[in-house]
Image 1 (tube, rainbow, N blue to C red):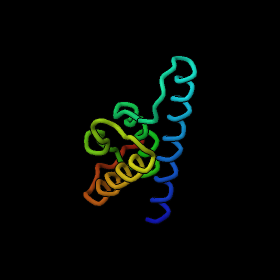
Image 2 (cartoon, one colour):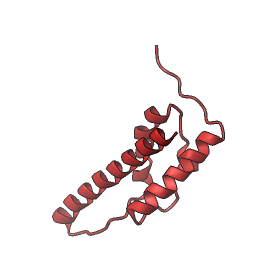
Image 3 (tube, one colour):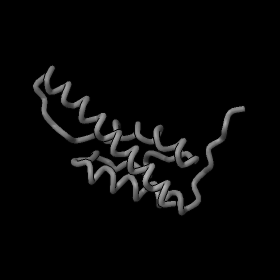
Length: 97
């Protein structure tokens, strides 16, 4: 499980970093500055995590309403919710033949 935790954390941190690069480009183009990741954008990380953990994740149970103000908040909150979902018997994803 420790290996899985590490993979999840790495993917979450990579996703956060990508969002920050996008934000920096927007700031350069439009003058907007911010490091927050909104909840709609955060839902995209589930597509990255599902193949790693092998289960379908429900966004409304994993993603925090209102988004995330920091990388630590993003990683800690989502990781905790994903691990909780795994412990509570998530639905297995089906592989296409």
